[in-house]
Amino acid sequence: MDRSGFPSRIEALVAYALAAAGTLLWVACALPSGPIEGVGGDPDAATPFRRAAPLLVPVLLLGIVLPVGSTLSRRERGLRAVLAASDAFIAGYAGLALLALPVQRDAAQGVGLILLWALAALSLLEAWRCAAPSERPAPPAGLRGVRLALCLLALMTPAQALLPQGRDSHTTLARTLLLVPFLLVGLGAAGARLARGVQGLRRACAALQVALAALLFLALRFTIRDMPPTLAAVGPAGRLALGLSLLVLALALLHLLVLGRRASAAGAGLRAPSPAG
Image 1 (cartoon, rainbow, N blue to C red):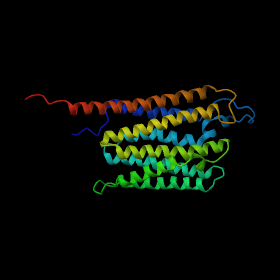
Image 2: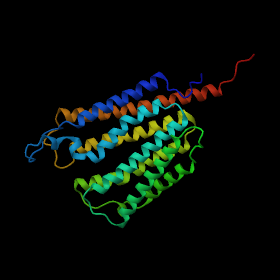
Image 3: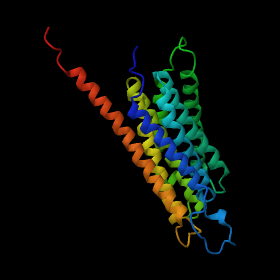
Image 4: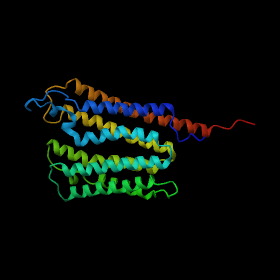
């Protein structure tokens, strides 16, 4: 039986530990991170989910599902479907969240929203075609190339043309939700296009997971320490959330390292000379 598509025991262990740490972090984000002065004693106002739900909820949700999905997938098409579905979720959610935020938009920012919806549609189309029965033809690689090109186009556009102006918390969230999805989707599309085989696609998923974990840590640090109304002090739940976000980032890096070591070992095995008969 060909087990090349199966993860090793250590790969599966780290992936499931990563999902478990993300689940614990979800619980910590639902607890008040500390007291807030002048908010009428409402403890919910100090929870990270209350303060920055449009950013934290999708990153946490995808951070829990992605390592499990990439580990359970055994075939190349399944892993491509996982990557494309992740890209569709990122772009689609960001588009919906931006529409709901009360910020002023101009024509350039409207173009940014249109690009997000186009990315979501292209990614969903690829995920649907990858999840189709194996007798159907695989989706063309051009879909991933178009997604990557759209991300590069958005990232090369001068930032002041796309980003709303202001310093309030809604504007800060809008800036993050408009630029970061292009970075994440571009990483996923590039990984899916350049990866070869099941293990290459797993490494692409792991690289996306590292980017999500880094974003999660930075977003939580800003939400707990700097986002107005600022906390009078960071309480035990806030310190727990920050510590768990660091653990999630460390496990994501470890997962990528483990997958990279397996690839190096496989490459060394292919280069080793065969024994003399």
